[in-house]
Image (cartoon, rainbow, N blue to C red; front, side):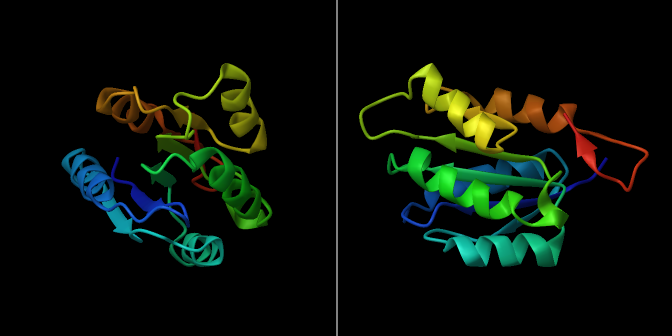
Length: 144
């Protein structure tokens, strides 16, 4: 099933190679990608998600500020009724001092992320997550 994936970095992250790689990976899986690019302000991400109505939002970060930026942006996304059930994942370098402690990963999930992929996660984990998304009979929402 072809899906629309909204791809973005967090607002403090200027890296782009990771976004190009992820876009190619997701397109290789047969899905359409709207790539917002680097340094995307939270408001623009929310506005774009509302406008495009994606089946999945993928956030990538390389600069190590994914934990803080991620908590802030997932709160903004989940504050929108239309986005409360949209699957949202974050991955990459989520902490400046190395991998996040399990408690921090749990905090990101509790804040609203459906999956959290650390820097050591491979592409196969994202492929599997996307492949496991299945449509429900209620309004076309996807569940994991």
